[in-house]
Length: 134
Image 1 (cartoon, one colour):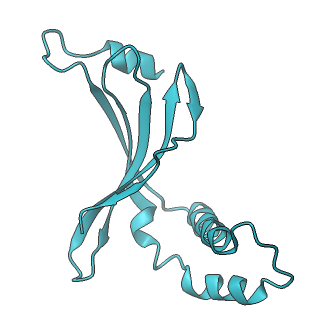
Image 2 (image 1 turned 180 degrees about the horizontal axis):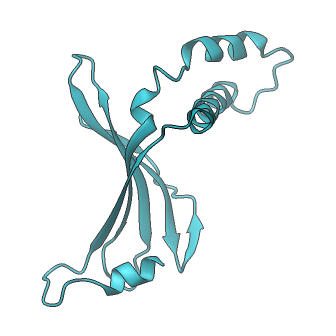
């Protein structure tokens, strides 16, 4: 499907690149709960890394208390962005962009590269990194 967007560039355009944006807003309670549980698992997994702890109840309890839907509200809406630089050797980069309050309370743009697509097959982007305009 993304190939059709790449082929639909404007005739005469100087840029060969293309970008597709899809806005989203999670309103369903179950969808929001999935985001919260995913973020808890992601953070607890990062904290534990490759260690095997006999009892993770303290970390799990802390995650349940601190990683809440209210605190993750900025992740519940934003844009999914797919971009391609337009060259034959390039793949699609896919990211999620959202706005979140910075330390001074002003809204700032954030983005996270989630994966790339090459030859029509998705793969984890080794250069995946978050970017924020704090």
